Image (cartoon, rainbow, N blue to C red; front, side):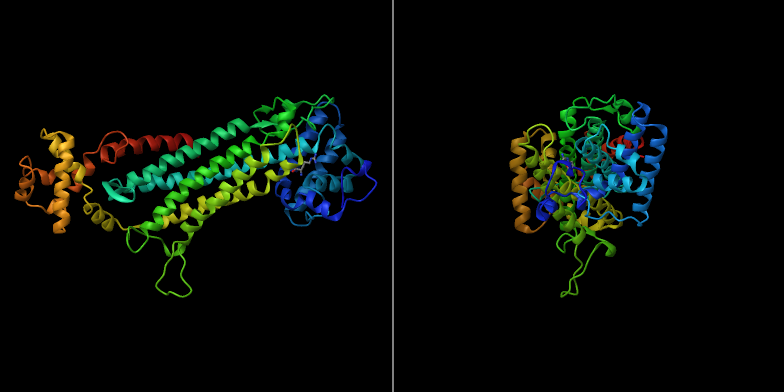
Length: 461
Ligand code: ARG
């Protein structure tokens, strides 16, 4: 049990206490960030004259050696150390002796862990954003291919009005664009370096915090040392953005599960993204979509957990904050995995476009257009609504669609109808005439596609 702080203690820590307190089992995840932070700190200490060039070279070589050995598997991070910071420092002192004991000059584990968590979170944020970029490109491609693929649009899960597959996927494209922007906003807000804040009140050493910040690619140093060591807002913001991403993915998954069902048959999930049943040989289950939908819960859980952990903590650092890690790490991994798998599923899915079109033709998705026809012929909308209600009742009774009624039958309900009603309520007209900004008509869709094309060029790698 190697501890950094044994000096004022006369008794060994109780084993249970030691284990309860230790964080090595999970903070070893940011061993790389911990060592990168230490290397920047050492360079800065040298630049301000606290360490000599020679000490710097020895410490940097020592840390690089530890990093290499960890990465090539010759040095294992074991739980005989309390945390990753102790692991690095103890190994450094073992390797280079006295200069290693100077590593922690002008630094506390409080600002060190604040830095490590920030560096790790920043890296994960960018990795998640990369996954999102692939998803955005996939949605854009599917939209371009499906400007004319008709399908029913739903409200209350009841057929409402016809639209296109491009339009439906376009809704998710907008959500994922906002998700992408949110990650960028969080990055910009969080990208300030806490190192040099000490335990809570800065330090009397003449540290150059600007230099440390720039060595670690931050925009600059944080401005209040108490806030620096007790701020986890950026983790909460990220977990919140990740929860929203999962909510969007989960809704899309829910639709894919419905569309893949025997009743809808709008899509067929590729064999590579489906699983079978151990008992029912005919089954091909949408497990990946269900798992993404299901994993949404654990990401929300991470957000709720950290919000709750942080809410009663007096300034500045308190050990409660060690609880920021496990669930956040799990959420980062979960979201990265879910976006990647979802994108793979979407890239390989088959859209059964004929079934979608047939479905759009049934279920009176053109009823609003029949009412609009009457309005265009001078009937007030509320009366038109009532007349079309009668048409629908008539059709339900006969088991036919509006398109199948004879003109006589139309005229029997309202004399305003003429031969051109058939064209006015055809699926093609219903979709192609809807060209207000953001609507599914092809002109409106082309306009959005070119805006998205430009957005992709400007925002994605
Ligand atoms: N493992 C601790 C954490 O994750 C590191 C900071 C320890 N600082 C302290 N004062 N005990 O928060």
